[in-house]
Length: 264
Ligand code: ADP
Ligand code: MG
Image (tube, rainbow, N blue to C red):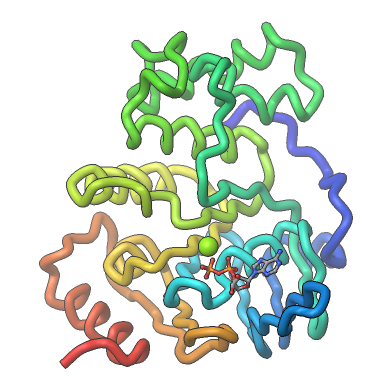
């Protein structure tokens, strides 16, 4: 399906579970706490006793208020930080960061192909492999465009494609659509649901958008305000493609909002 090298992770960080465990449950976060201490400033307790699991091929949405440690959690999962307590065991993961971080001087094609180059492919080879994906993502005509010439939705698609082409079994998506207007965001959520249905990846999707979480997740983990703790884990047993107006989706949205303490 995807013609990319599946590389072993070179990052330091989470303990790597043995292979069979890694296949069955690629993301295992157990009792994780994270506190930031900065000189004499008061310590910031970002996460407290957070446990979650994502089974192979599962999309787990993590929803919580701004500042509750969602980005920190993804960095822990990707091995970019270490927990102060608890354990993180994770198969190799690619992070789609909160800001798109595209290189402003490089074309959409080269930005998408960056992960392949980081994996050791030469420029022409990386372009050859990335090209059909741009077409599939509706970006064929924009292959040579620079990020400034792309719409917000297009930039997010290039950024997502870069994470996908890293060829890791786990995708960690950090509020992928938060910066988009409501119409584009709704379109992109539909698009991502479609892409993920055709890709057997394990996905941890962080968002502060409750509707996004229930539309895209197989399960929704609800985090409290800082320090982030798991308030509830909600199964979304609704077949795809999902409709926002589906009474089951509406009910789940209400349930998650209630868990967050938002509602009437
Ligand atoms: P979220 O993504 O849910 O908005 P973050 O994980 O970015 O939350 O941050 C959680 C808390 O930890 C915030 O109060 C933030 O200021 C603090 N924080 C995050 N990263 C650092 C860091 N590297 N140093 C100090 N404080 C940090
Ligand atoms: Mg964040």
